[in-house]
Length: 341
Length: 179
Image (cartoon, rainbow over all chains, first blue to last red; front, side, top):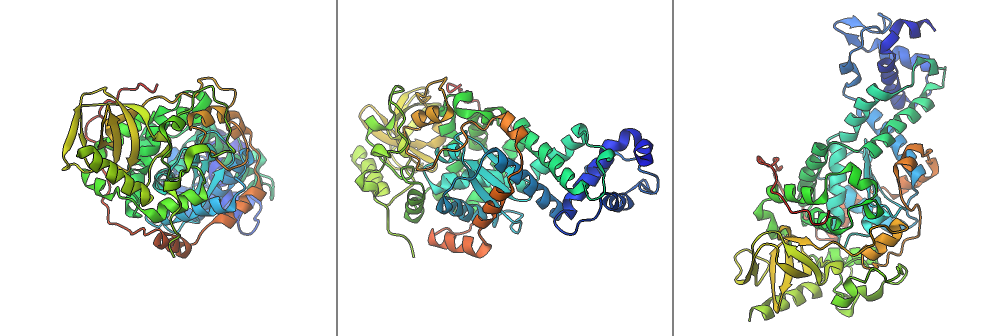
């Protein structure tokens, strides 16, 4: 293919542009690969020279870092979400999933991107982790949800993930790493074949991003924005610090934390950063909310409000795990309040 | 008597279903700085006991920004950030994450089924798309109207909150005993 020869070293960049554009079109009609390429190139100009007309020679890195239109971002995120769900399925509990979607959507309504097609899911894995894809897909692992005792803690973690989406952290990471690493070249441009392959290639870069992790500053920024979103949504904004305090007490090794430790700053470091910026005036928002406590405890039995006897709170390490038995976690005085109409 | 006051406060909190941290009940911890324990979860409440840095405490409960501590026979409230929880006793090298977690979490009793054990790098990188699961995910999505109704039922009221700037100076060092 002559075009391939002509672009030489710029092939990767061109392929990425085609890829990203391919994502956008996959939701609608099915233009051929060459149509997509033509469309993308004709829309690009570098220094006044139309790239398509110049056979795509002078692409710069800035072109690959263009602002990706929202529909493309959403399609890309959905492709990554589908891939992630190939790694771990959803917990088979509709009530829990809808609950997490209610909390998450309410939080997202208080973000700068309230109208994305937000979707939230609990992944059925006991690893501790959370993921956000571009376009508004947010996932928590079952292992992480098991750490939580309240809706404000759930909100704190969801708001952190929502912040990654709002700030386009993963989107920028994908763009950056796609330009560096993607091996796909124009040889894969077969008529009608680009869309599927492009989508998979982008999803692969996104999944690699979950393994690689975002930058430390991205994580700290998501903490800073996350507590603000939680506060704006009416939650006690100390939910995220409480979860981090618990995570800091877990063995800081792969047995409990897995990938999470590789991809996030240490919980103690994040706690210290939050302490430095959360205003004392926010402490007034740490008040009891019976309506929230009741519905969290109903949705996640055995995890919510509890005042267990001291002896039962921290079993000896030798004690076998019996997850089917809530044990002494729900004494009478924590009886579920009446649902709020 | 101060202890009585704070225990009463706790009882009220518990009875009204506050966000108590069940697993932290009487969990051991240490102060990360000198701390004045307060009779109530408020900065202007009376100080019932002054603790030095690295003082061993038992965590009674947590309430947002506040954490209730017991030292000897005295109970009082400190800031959440004043305390580091002692490392949980989960085995450092469990045969599976699930085992470690169940131990670490005090056997919290999740009713969820078992899915993937460890979600490791290899699984993430080699995952094949699962369109059926993605379709299922979409069925859980809630509209803005549904989420707003959910918020009303939870007495959640939107607030005006200014963004937070990054701290100018490096974050204060927190001793990393959990490492």
